[in-house]
Amino acid sequence: MNIDHFFRIAFFVPFATLASSPSWAEVISQEQAIVYALEHSPVLHGAASGVQAQNEQIKSAEAAKLPVIDLDYGLVYSDNPLVILGSKLNNRTITAEDFSPETVNEPGFSDNYFSNLRLKLPLYTGGKITAGIDEANANYASSLAQQIRTKSEVVYQVNRAYLLAQAAQEAIKIARSSTESAKKHVKTTRDLLADNRTVASDNLTAKVYYSSVKGVISQAEAQYEQALNALKQVMGWDLSAEISVVPWKHASKQEQLPQISLAETQALNNRHDLKASDQNINAAMARTRIASSASRVQLGLEASGSLYADDPLVDELSVGVLAVAKVNLFSGGANKSRVSAAREETKRLQAEKAGKELEIRKQVRNAYASIREGKDRMKLASANLADAQKAVTQVNERYGEGRTILIDLLQSEQALMKSRSELLNSRLLLEASKLELKLAMDDFAEAKK
Image (cartoon, rainbow, N blue to C red):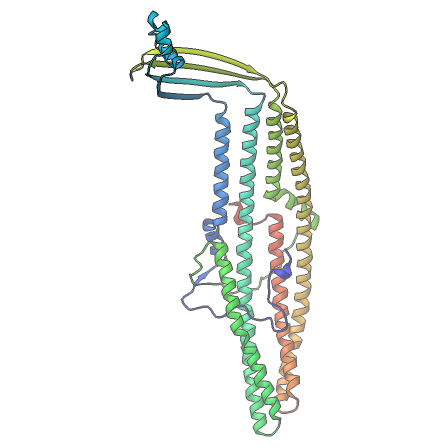
């Protein structure tokens, strides 16, 4: 993800994305937001259902090893001579009269009740059943690994949304401070104009500047609402509910990052979507074995018992046992093509995994680069902010004494606002990049519980 698209608190007067929270809004801590999301996120509920569905597929695949028992019960009503003669044979009620031409050709209508109990048992399927079970287990393991990865993504999204809301709170402080300063400049300019120490145009300029700064608040309210809606969405929270976040606190010390090569290794070992890719490959290999089984000998056993009668109380039993050996000799090349297609699918998944490994390494390296950028920008922004604050203080004093012009004061105020915004943006970049690194490394502790 491009960090520049991750947050939007930049450009000339980039200081507002949050209005003051309603007094009745429920304050949600970051930890509470994560816990709630893990319990209520629709995305996670869907992932859990997917895992359960794959678990049921395992049971279905294992059931193929067991015998299949079917029971039929029905009534035959027909004037078909062959059906009627067969019914009498099954009922063991044949007489010599039944073979007379008149009776055989014109038997009239007859009804007959029957019930069949059949047991089918596969003895050997060329490895199809075992391969089907292996495929089901691999698919289950893949969905389980993907569920854990989805948890990491949800934790990341909650952290990101919460971070944006906290940054917005910091941004509104800058907006309020700038608005207060602009308001004071209007009063000072008005006083200087009353003493004939400035001109009317400066008075108008001060008012225009104050209005432009104050006008950002309306934009802030809309952006604040959007930020909270994004947080509530990833949490699975009611969008109509009022919430607020805990103010952003500066970290007491910076975390030590591992060497980039070690981070790459940890990411490749930790990433559950990569583990899901491994299982997808295993499933594809199992499908290859399933396709190969079609050209092997198939052995099966079928036992059946049938009861027939010309009244509902069936009373004549027939039993039979059938052993079947089947082998496909020619399928027009269909079996061979299915095997080839399954093998190519395996190769495709292996290539996708190799590409994903490169993508993971790139994500780690990009996050490290953004972290370095954030640290450098914070260092420069802190120094610039200190100088800008001193400049505003000095120019403000001279302007109050009528010893400098308004444009100098407004330029120094703009420089101060930009310095404050740059410090906020660089801090946001740093913290966002750390979240990107954690996501790349699959290193959210909350997702492993």
